[in-house]
Image (cartoon, rainbow, N blue to C red; front, side):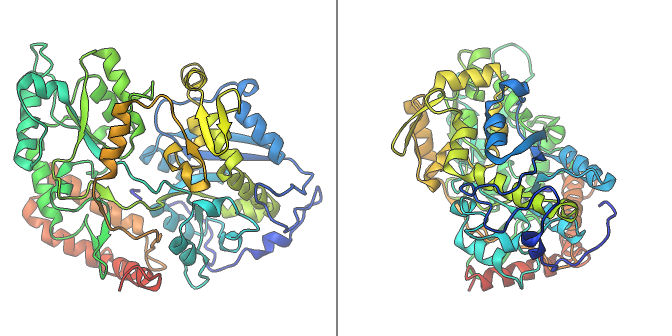
Length: 529
């Protein structure tokens, strides 16, 4: 959701139903469905390249040791090749370069903002005609009814451009060094004043006891381009998430009049030098690495796995290896405010139109790949490996062999995370009727799940993937917004100019039209009154 090459423009409304009736000299893919349970009719073996975003230090094993690739290739008669980069501007730039050069991947991950940009450039295959039980029966188990309604609507210019199986539960929170608090005689912050005092103490009062002033209160991920919403000041003003709704109207938190207050307070803590001075350049999981290394005392995370005791590769356990006294707790410094928004699908899997133009049958095989990875069989393979080797099964209960899975993590680059990116994590397996029983979860982990489940979530778009009006590039709007945010927090533009900048974003950069279209789509879906 957070983030042009030249190409021939094509109509966004051009249906791709011709795909289902096409054939090749080497074999025919009949329109009898591409779901995971379907038998591939084609004799042709396709090479399918996937280009995806991945977080963390993951690698693929040698091909002869990659049992997941072997199983997928044999199941679907393909040669699957995966390339990946950390999420962020480098990934986006690389993708743009590949499209500009004509060297497009067959399937790639794309954020909600970029979906519209690529679609407007005529670069994506529209998939609305395949959003049904015949082609994507397993994928549909992960999708929400309001979202499906909007994507199937042939009058919706956005339509269905990217497949988005996503986690419905959001475990967003801030984590703080409890051992540092104890050493300094402080309590977990429960309001803004306490939070700022803790950030100061973590910066100036030597919380690690090494006699040096080399720690900071907080850090965030800027990717060299933005003021992200990990900063707790967004929550202070009830502005977590890009936009929220009150049941009647949409409010964009990043360009509203109140945004100036958030930016002013972020600038104040930067000027006070109580945050990591390199926060703007942080990418990927750098913030968690700094947390584990004892360089900062507070971070935000929108996932829970990195802070579980039962995950041997979590940053909690990394921190304990570095310092046995490393101890953290989750907290929300603004208990009455939401820590994030209700979950929705913001990153999806898209197919370049160039792939469909060159070989329509290949699109069907790609859809079959995605649907298989969303199936029970594909889900278990890509998240838990081989049955009776990496996990055991008792009805719908899945009992992972954590010793064997830990070997994969340590000895084979944790490569299941690469394949597992096609579908949500184990906490979401109930969506397809599976109950993952993780024996490694400690009492602390279970309590953490319970704690975060009680946190408030702000109303978002309620499953609707809203889009700007046809012809408006949301990326241009967000890019300029980020420029204004960044210049304000670094003191290049006075905060007093925010009302003028907000007005410029809403008018010159067409924010009013964008948000009016959001509201229109949400009303049509029954989300807004």
